[in-house]
Image (cartoon, rainbow, N blue to C red; front, side, top):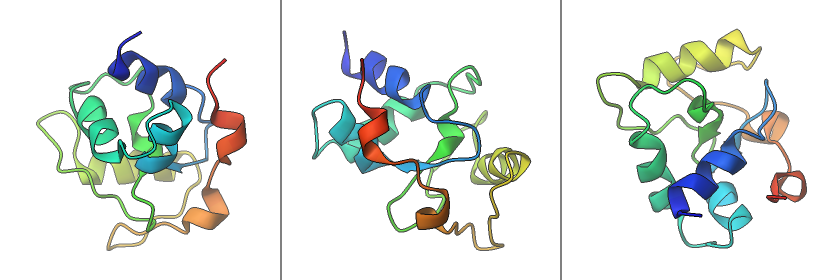
Length: 108
């Protein structure tokens, strides 16, 4: 399975109304220093909403995607808010309140 496929598999397991960091996803697939690569893999989805990419934020609790034509920070904010996650005007989230815990992210 490719790195991107592993990222997708883990991200699909994040429950609605929860978030994880890029680093958590990387660690869950056995690449603990691969947070940036996780971001890149999610960026290449180009608006594929079958993978809940919007549930992945930076470890400081901020939306930090650079975005493309299909996925923007404001779209990510909209999706998170639709799941009941409070996002501030400056795109910050209480990550500890909404964080999905790492142990339950491990791929099967």
